[in-house]
Every structure is written in C-alpha cells, then in structure tokens.
Length: 124
Image 1 (cartoon, rainbow, N blue to C red):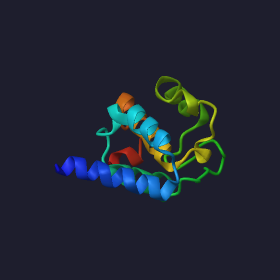
Image 2 (tube, rainbow, N blue to C red):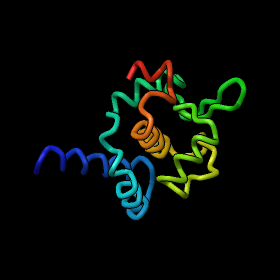
Image 3 (cartoon, helix red, strand yellow):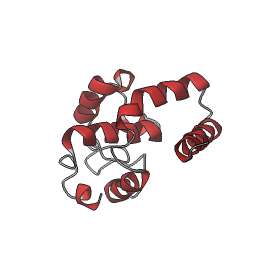
C-alpha cells in the first residue's frame, strides 16, 4: 500500500472514529475538499490557527465580528461558502465543525493567499 493511501486511510478511520460521521458525510467532505487539500499543510494550518485564535475553533474576537479558529467575518465566510460549500452559507463559523473551518481556510487561501490574514499569514 502506498504511503499516500495509508495516510488517507488513517485519516478516514480517525475522522470516522473521532467525529461519529457517517460514511456518506465523510465521502461528501473528501469529494468537496479535494481541490484544496494540498493548499496548506496541517502544520501551516496549525501555525495560522495558533496565531489567529490560540488554536480555538470557538474563538470570538472582542467585537464579535471575527469568529472561529481562523477569525472569519460572516460576509467572507458566506462568500467562500457560496463558491465552494453552499451548505455552509449562513452558518456561524464557530458552529462549523473544525474540519469545515480548515476546508474554508484552505479554499480562501487558494483564492487570495495570505491577504485575508495580514499578520498571521506571514507565519505560514
């Protein structure tokens, strides 16, 4: 078995075990995020997340405007979701599962690079 296939199998098994997702939900996730999977590594996401929210997927800025691990405002979140993950339009970023917050970040990074994260993006 190739290394890439082993990693995918391990990730799939871990996701199923840790999240209690159905097979259908996991397939939806894998299918809808495939084009963004290599945009940022897990390590790069972790550095961005640590800087933006101290690794807190439930973080809310003092003003309440920026939300979630990557501090999306609702307008940006909905714009990205509308292009890539329509079922997430209108969902508060802190209510989205961590893997969807990661996927949204990868999708936005694929479009605009570090521009949406002018300070923390430099740490990626």
